[in-house]
Image 1: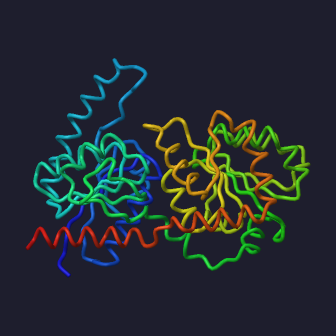
Image 2: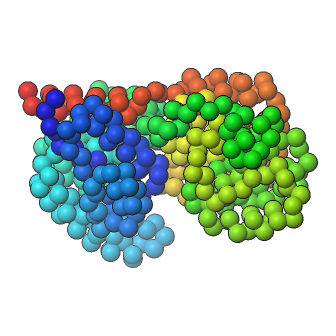
Image 3: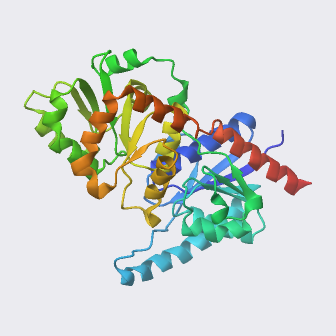
Length: 370
């Protein structure tokens, strides 16, 4: 296979970065000679995570629009202009055969410049509700890889390919059973286990919901793995210091998510696209609490898409403190509910997403060369 050059652009959160790295790894596996360059946003987490995964990255000085203080957007527009110039220079210097956008600030200027320069572009839309940037870029994209049905509401139907979202491969590779995973966290290997996660920074509402019901959790025949994020870590440790919460294991960050997922009978999570894809592929019963702090409220739409298919429960953020933990405790005791949720969420899984996206990219490059 001939050596090819590919730019992958986007980031900002783990939900964009991990799929991007999965696509890069799939491209390398199919074509070890492929030359891959990432384009991210300066000072965002991709500038650290991508080099750690072994890939070079160029940072653009782009930032998001400030919806609350419109005056600040003068600086944002200036950064956008600088980003477009830098994206153009990067593309001209690197000479890619194709450019992939995975979402996040940097993908907009990079894909727009690539399509202006006549380079095939691929959009990887992770959510059930397309963002403004991807809707604007879609008319010039060669292919649009989606994770949900019904995306012709936003994109040209003939360019849509349902691929699912790439996930971290280590989550799927483990051969560890549920009992071993629980023992890893120092828990009872035979007791029902609830996993509560809110992303690496933590989710304030989810954490406050747990804190409000710690006494009730302590009285139940269940155990809890509680990832608080770093901002709630100190408060959680103080709450748990009394020593009566022996069925709760708390940490700011879970390094072994494969173990945590395997240990859990029920998971409480935000409704980011990557998290949902992981839950689908692992067939995990879930209660989703969409974050209200994301563009175009796409997490609510992601969660609704699952709830409509009886594949997960959804609790709105503003009702979580009163209802989340009672719902979780009732659900985890009900084996019939758990089995139904697991069955329905598994039916939405899209396997081998990264490999399928890599094949689409190779096909576009070959078509462009012919």
